[in-house]
Length: 306
Image (cartoon, rainbow, N blue to C red):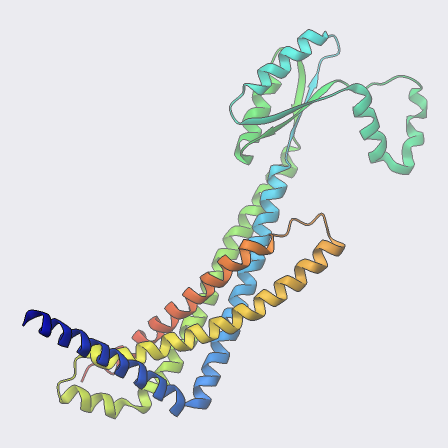
């Protein structure tokens, strides 16, 4: 007997959910133009949101790449023997946060200096065979925050003349990357709120047109959940549909952008398409559906108080 009741209860639940879905679909069909306008508006909102998100993430990726390239130049005293220089290198390697230590000879340093001078190499003619540049180590660390700390520690070592890392430039770089992340986050939150506002107002128009029907259903004993679910599903469909269109456009646009960057700007560290686009697509679909559901909930609250 209990099994029969359970089966009946399950069948009733299925029929109820079928009713909710039919009502949501019927509402979308009945308000066809409004639904198309809503999906288009949501798609545009999420497209802009996605574009800003892609831009911010790629700028953040660029910032991380620039930060990882920051290195410390440790210049050695001229009177050091080969053994002393190896000992300095060993001590630097053991410092916390140091990930890479590269020894640079005088000749290598001079060749690099000539490359930087370019057409002005004639300025070195006065030096003759003399090489005034010191032996040095190039040091990389695991976190940008450690650069100053490691530079100070290496600068105090025996046998080290000084340690430099372009402090002012690096600090400006870190400030720039921090603001890129902060402004990007603010823009993403703002655009998400704008998309939520658009969906909420779209659903509110539908709810307003059916306010009398909602009132009658309340008077005859329908629960809030029974009335709410069709509108909730409708909002989720609108949000998902708009997000799907935005995802398709963004995927195509990012693919074209990647082709251009790889062909003309190879040095630019663009985030690889996969699995980045998969993660982005899933995120936008979830956000679009969630915003649709939340927008419906916000719109319904006013009309549920009968």
